[in-house]
Length: 490
Image (cartoon, rainbow, N blue to C red):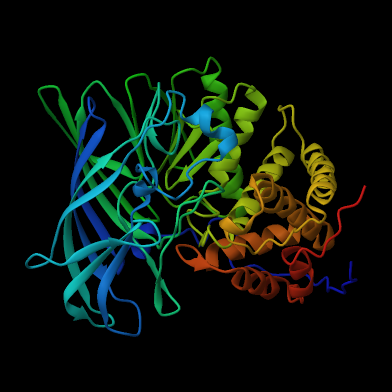
């Protein structure tokens, strides 16, 4: 490894405590918005919907078309996109192969609009606008669709215990570097990329179901055996929901935030709720206050650990070790800060949110006793596991590639993704803490959170933010890790 000279100046940070608490409603101004009316059929596991998208052109050029990611189409029969690794396939498709997807039936503005399903694998909806939308100007389109859920323990699908609607609505592709960024699904990681927007979603469903969603409920109506609820979610990256006939809920408030824990098979539900509350309180104190009024933590059918969505996280009910279950709760809640508020391209820079979520999890155990896990144990285990991974990769492939700035599809296998993104990322931030002290790193993260709240960042943005806080040249340090130049030796 190269040697680096860094400076150790006392640093000042932008705000103390919650003096600069984020204002969601202020940040919700001048955003694109989605207004959806949805109706769920439990017997067929289909969702019929109509959605109006109010788009604001924030580019410097007229736009003649809009493009939307159609993530559900990765689950359709004949899809070439991999939604789950081969090793996890039988576990997730526990009843055998099952298919789902989304069918767009109509798109209109003032009148019907031409559209096509395109992308690398029918994963994008392209809508041709009647008139180009000029910079700073807006336009609206209305689309009708039908979504079919597959029988799979996944973020999108139904299982024995929960019905998961993750990444199910058509969402605008990010327009970046002069073009629409189309995202292909992948079994590695979280292949999603989106700007914050405002969501107003009304959903009708059988009243026997309990529902947990992004946002807060603003209206409830009952008609026979059908419940209809409206949810408002300003300045969030997506809208997700979970339904089930089995869920129970317990709640507690912390720092003015209502934390709900939904469960169907957790004898220690009070502990799980307490861990959720402690995680919110800890990260409020360390990074800046969670800006939304509510957070839902849901025990759900999900075969690969946990999954973060705005204001809502899934915790896989297949995690039988209770210590591991608590750790997943903490990790997924950390994503409310790193991904939810401060966003990044999870397809190209997966380490940015995952590494910080892992480091935040380690900090949680440092700040909270009473668990069978400590910060030092987490770091020691990460070091050992990273060394073993490098040894195995070298023996099997003849080399090990630990570059971190890779797209999900560029990782050699699932283990390479996990170790390079999570484990190496955690060790990088631990090394950063050893270099400058934990106190300085926390000042960096507070400023980073405040500066880039509700925005999308790149690795260069992150490094520049840390350099501004510390008045140090940190690029050589971070590049050594990101470019895979750090050696992990026994």
